[in-house]
Image (cartoon, rainbow, N blue to C red):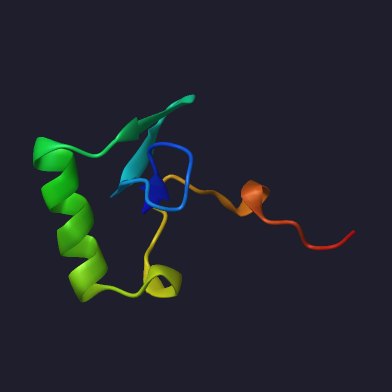
Amino acid sequence: MAPTGLGKDGQRQPFIRIGPKSLIAQGENLRQLQGLAARIPFDDRRNNQASIDDLDLGG
């Protein structure tokens, strides 16, 4: 959840990243986000689009 405005009393909304844009999650995207958050811890989620070349092996 991120603030949608400035100030300590600003509303907070869930945002999603689609390509280069950060958008407020709405509709089906919001339902998918809530479903994932309820079932699978972030660190246990798979990235099916990553390859071995994406890993930094420190060398």
